[in-house]
Length: 72
Image (cartoon, rainbow, N blue to C red; front, side, top):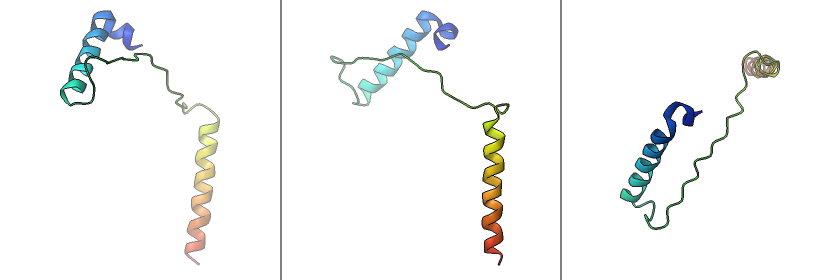
């Protein structure tokens, strides 16, 4: 996705900037720098997935039960 938005030149500029900063901060040796520019899309649940509302209801039920015990 970033490659589509930034293009080849944009990706190269960002990579160059990151490597320069790493060398400047002493986090990398410019003779041995290797960059892995692969990315994987995060598995983010969407609100329309059935497990998400069920998890909310379950969490609320546990919270409610604990709250009742404290008030005794």
